[in-house]
Image 1 (tube, rainbow over the protein chains, first blue to last red):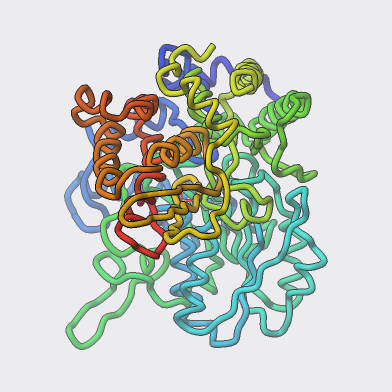
Image 2: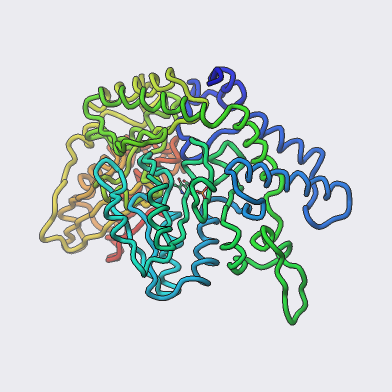
Length: 407
Length: 150
Ligand SMILES: Cc1ncc(COP(=O)(O)O)c(C=O)c1O
């Protein structure tokens, strides 16, 4: 492992020098969205200052340049997740839009009434609601694979749900509310044994580990750029080419056509078929810059750093009386979700905020997970590549103090 | 350590959070409305007994943060014995205080409720304080449906 200098990394993120309520910012809400390195900010400024025009539509120099940069970002994403072809990388607004695209395009064209879609009990609303909408539209049936108290998928129950009726599995790679990392290789192998395609929601996994879609052999993989240290408004749908080819467009408009007459429209090929309208041009180029930045550090190094932080934070949290960790899967990413006896997560959030500590307090868009644990909400600290053990210490000291104040 | 928060978390709030008043189901209530804050998942059920236009009893159930628990606890104390129109006027005044409109005048009229004035500096927490009052408003209007702060 190359030397991981968290101090150097922090210096790359200008916002980390901010003070919040006169205290140094301790940013532990990375699962909601990550901060941006200077390289990404510079990329946005550079595009808008020197290289901005609409893409795929002009012969003029700027349009050609912007198009080149945009397509270069697609190639960077392809390499980052090791997709076989740039045609398999569809740019969207985020993980949410990617899942809706698959539900509406793949779901409506390939699934029928009575077909079953299997999700898990730890999904984000983004991987629940689009399927419920599809079920209402065409009469498919949603099946939910349960989890245990530790927040781990119950594999046997998942396997038992797979049947001839199952036509799609859509499951999270890593849970945003619990941190659990699912055994996706096993999940995919079992589904494929029955010719069932698998969509992985990679919104949380992608910033924490290296992802190889060909090694995983998943059929769809979705993620958001803003959780990968890139600009908001960017997201990626990876799909195997054969599946994407067979799917109808999701939205109609400019850029996604080959030829239009009032009688008939011929659609463009991949990936443009799914990219109607003007995309977030500068932002997607900025996502490419984020990927360059992460590649230079190395995803394996980032994963090791965050594993150390999580282990350190977990050990300290377990030593605090009245603190309950929600989600203790044996395989976890850098998320510490917790409750405190008799202190509501919102009070925890406000109190920690007064110390400059940003955590998330709420249901994390995973209300079924909250119901499962019988809590209205949890407090969640989530770690990124720039967090430090000292910040964990500040968090734990803050928690101990607020327990005292509440008495 | 939490000096900055003294305006928000006053001792009265901790007290009502620890020992909420009127925290019970009311079997002979003639108004019952559920309040829900979808942003944070807080839920409460407000029970009222109204006789001849006067609130003769008020109680609640549910779980929420210290601000919302203290708010509903204080509210049930203060509206008991008030007429419906007095309670409605309090709702308006409280709402104006919590959202930061014209607070100097309101504080005196609100008496004990003024301890919640601190929320106006914390936009993310205003709804915690007003949930109880929106629920009361619905109950006074005799709406049966559960209400949400959205
Ligand atoms: C697991 C998971 N899936 C999907 C999403 C949705 O991402 P976005 O809001 O960027 O579309 C999130 C974001 O919180 C998430 O954590």
